[in-house]
Length: 64
Image (cartoon, rainbow, N blue to C red):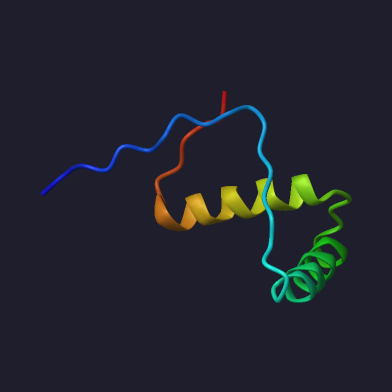
């Protein structure tokens, strides 16, 4: 079985939604930002990535 190697990530990131997804994800983002008191979309997405990582990799490690 082949091993998966993640691609090297750029320091800049841009994400687009398909036309039929825009309203749905904007509503989700706005509701989450309000609930979590997060002021920017970037911070929301970083929080989401950290949460997903903690679910996938439940062992704690420190961020340097």
